[in-house]
Length: 356
Image (tube, rainbow, N blue to C red; front, side, top):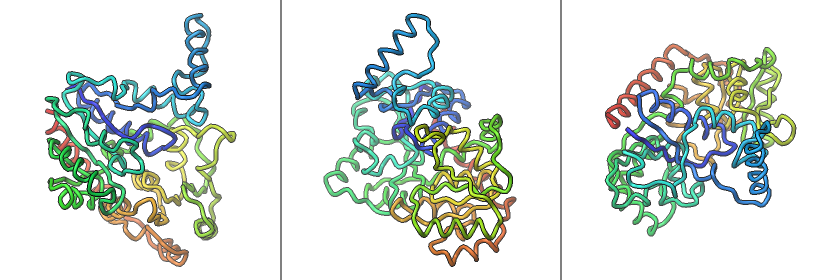
């Protein structure tokens, strides 16, 4: 099949890039022709970006060595992320370029595509631009990010009409299936995040060329730092005798670290402390002892679903007192890996049935 994946625009979000990569790779390995639908990567907005693109084209025409990438070459924070995107998600198209015969099916998801604050045009993620088209419409692991529909009656009415035309709907959080039923009146499956569709060896290969971090390291990937998280981090480091590897620090004050660096930091750490959903996912996939600091503002249902599925609900803490309890508990990784494998087989089966 010719399949388009519609997800949130790729930017300096490791989890966002990796979930797009994972679904793209999974469908490609099934033998399909896959493209990522991503407007932002093709958007040239500022004068500096336009000037940089002109410069890039002149160098290309003149046969000169090019050290930058087109389109986003002036968005410095993306410089170390673009090589991964261009190598592993090479086929991309914008919504404005799509016609009815462009794809046999469009898959919406994953990530928080149905959370209004992250979607400039929410109706796009309910495929409003495909009205009247004879194509398959699927949602795989789409996420609302919150436990209830919060965008009002007008948006609800439109989304309800659009989602009724989907051939299959699934959400990343169990609570999302409830929203689909109660708010939209459609049945939805629960499925795992796309990053869990690939075996962990896939990610080990990606970061195999990276230099491992120092031994006895505590990888810290906390998006919302506070006095509380700093106190938690200090306690974990002290009790485990680990040095902190701060994954949020930039290489030189400008460029975000690469995808491979980010994966490598988790894969070779001795412990992980995070408030990130995908930071938690990869801690589990790499079988690293971890603690999640609960973050209600970013949405906790996704953490609760993931941790419940793997039998690791106790790893999410709210207070520093909880840290000591969690540090005294071991993880049975054999049981965790078996649960993940069972869900991987189930969800791959769903994708195969949809795309046969």
